[in-house]
Length: 350
Ligand SMILES: *Cc1c(COP(=O)(O)O)cnc(C)c1O
Image 1: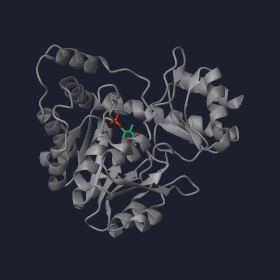
Image 2: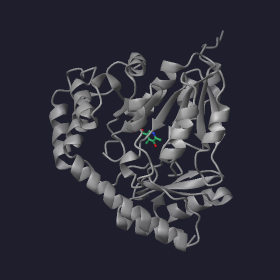
Image 3: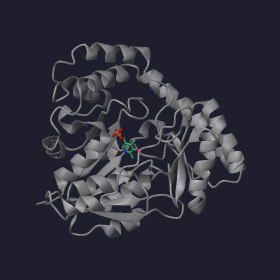
Image 4: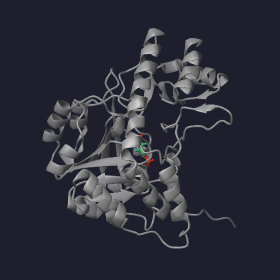
């Protein structure tokens, strides 16, 4: 006799996270990674940490939290670390939502938001981007109901690269009810060059319901090691720490994150070079006749609509892997200048 194993029926409807593809021999511009591997000093710290892999990691990531506290001038009780900021996104849902409560976010935005929301038994509320591919903050405000517990604002937005400025964000935060938590996801903060795009810390310091998410995966080049952090009011940080999967930020990641902060100047100089490449790539695409929204991240968005999948296939024929969202557009990470040239040639011949 067969019997059903009683897993959650709603999981069947869960969208799965589609990671950027890796194709052997092809240039990967699909996952917003930086092209360079760890600096020698970071690689050494990683090697040293692996020698003690028989030991459990420091569950509180004390040294990393203290270091971040000094770097950011934020008290240690306002910092939570997580196994990548994806994990922190999920922790925020778990820390704020009862079953059936609502999480508001823009769409399209980071594909993890609907997943972590549903995993957390909460209900996703997607608010379409404006025609210029930016967050529609007024519509997001209007989407807040008595059931809303959490709002994600991804700034710059993944996958469009667009931003909300200080004035727009201030006006929005002034209107969000104080019991609704706003998470400002700043995974791409270090790539921002426009002074009108606010540092979310300004808001997290001053407002009890605002949190900032940052990661070592992007500008700091540690995507493979999984470590990110949140900054928020101590009560919120306490709740987020409660739903932390024990020991999930491993010891190698903690050591590598500290070593990356030691090498901050050098890593941020790479970001400045990337920003120049970003403008070169965007300008060239514009000259070729593509629509490309202004971007402050390490990628460009090509809203190609129905031509998206054909574009991605064409790029692949030229040995470049981009990240297509069928029917919407393609996101293309900025790589090294020569990688970008290969991509631009593909774009030219599409
Ligand atoms: C890449 C990314 C993250 C970071 O994810 P990690 O889990 O830290 O690797 C978070 N938010 C957005 C919007 C991203 O694009």
